[in-house]
Amino acid sequence: MTRLRKAALDLTDLQVFLAVVQERGFSRAASKLGCTQPAVSLAVRRLEARLGHELFDRTSNPGLLTQVGRVFKEYADRLVRLADEAEASVQDFEDLQRGRVVIGTNDAGVYALLPLIERFQSAHPGILVDLQRVPSRQMAADLVHGSLEFGLMNFHSPERRLRSISLGSDELVAIVAPTHPFAKRATLKIADWAREPIIFHNESSPARERAIRLAEQRQSPLNVRLAMPTLDGIKLAVQLGLGVSLMPHSCAADEIKRGDLVAVSMPEFRFSRPVQLAYHRARRLSHAAAAFLQVASQWARSRPVNGVQPRVNAQSARSYE
Image (tube, rainbow, N blue to C red; front, side, top):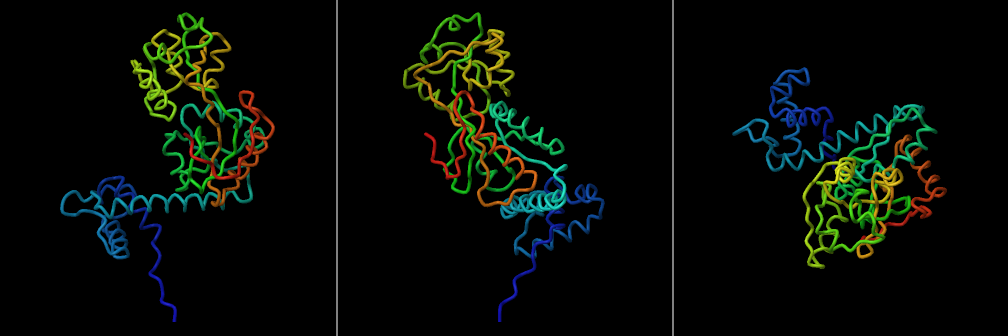
């Protein structure tokens, strides 16, 4: 006779558990949920009985998680999020006039995504495109865990559970003000660039790490003088003469065209970054996400980026060095 499995975790109990974590206390969670504190305590005790472990350290702060509780919280977050996504998917089943597509991107990726979003919204104006700021190094993990439907990447991930659509490539260039002496040069040595006051994004990236390593190899450590949270802020600071920077050409294309900024190639540092839209190869997409993937695939086949013809890559990508 087949042995019966334990009862499944109750979604409502998970939501109560997460409310206690968020509010850092049972009474505050009860107030937020509109129920009594005994009801909150009972829901947590049911989870603890099901798991066979205490989730909160009741000897100190009642909202402090135990080690098991911290591990369990990660899975509870995913389960509740997946339940929300399942409900949203059912609601959108018959009507693509509603829906949401969640895309992770860093600051630079927005510039590559906007033309694609413009094309998608012309075909599906009722669907919300939700761009969430995600560090490059975290993108693959969020796609695997299901918190994102798509992720804009500038490197090849070794994660085999992901597929990608190549949207082309982009070149990293030095960015300077039109009045800067470098603006008159056709090319620039990294040693010369490194000595100038440098403005960087305050989030680390593979490109930034590569620039630091290359400068150190040339015995010219980077003179980083200003760190900023956005590319728009960096471009404005460069225009004001506060320093020079390094970024993908596409991110400053409008300013370069207007003459507000000048892009100077650095042959020692020249390499093309892939621009690709990644997603989970096995997870079923919502109808809104499936529609976005279809538009992205068509757009990639028909439109070059920076002179490079995009192509669809259905194979798992290799690690990018």
